[in-house]
Image 1 (cartoon, rainbow, N blue to C red):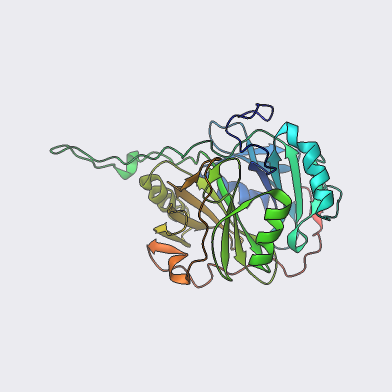
Image 2 (spheres, one colour; image 1 turned 45 degrees about the vertical axis):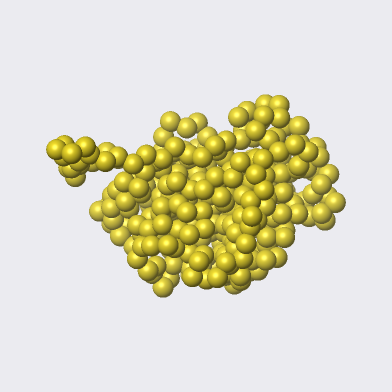
Length: 327
């Protein structure tokens, strides 16, 4: 849906971001980042000394990566709004008492930048709606009787994610962060499990969560998640990454909240990229019955146990901006 497209597929008279437009990371080695994300199945493009991430066949830029000394850091999150809501959004954010800030170095100054929860820079901008308008297509192939369903490893197709599904953010207080993102961005709670995790969706229609919140002692990126079309792609993506040397991860399994099939691949910096398929979808005209779930009902229905480091935040405790470099 174009950013200027009327009221179709929108909840009437409700102010809210419609998509995560993109995320931005600083990493110590762009060459290593290129190798990881290309093997993951994304298109990696050069852009003035930085890298940008695209899904195959999709013109939208989902992420920007710059090179920086030290550990990997989440730089900012950018959210998309409809054209006719931008003025109202600026006024709304002022009433919520947010602190306007300048765009981070080398970031596009477009839109409105403000100091988010835990001091994370947040941007809203007029942008096309890139969150889905309906539940993503999901396929399951089964061979007929007398027909071989074997797929030879030598002929296995590459896995190419279709779009960013959601982003998982470390935060120092999950409930306070829920309140912040509901008040400022108009996101809505889908489900949570106090005090450890929460899932928020977009009011104009989105997957069960476009933003996840994970408890930590500081902000950071836990994972970025990418939509694929089948359980086979989830498993094949994980196996492909393991063969490429990225053999630490979690999966294959099925989550409880959101119900998606998953495989998490640990990236070179201790965070994760997830292959995700068949997540629950919340249309713009549905009021989702959110709930607070017990821990055993919040993480996974089936699959292997996660690595003990799965919820460890490896980003530096110091939230000061790192010294950025250009190759």
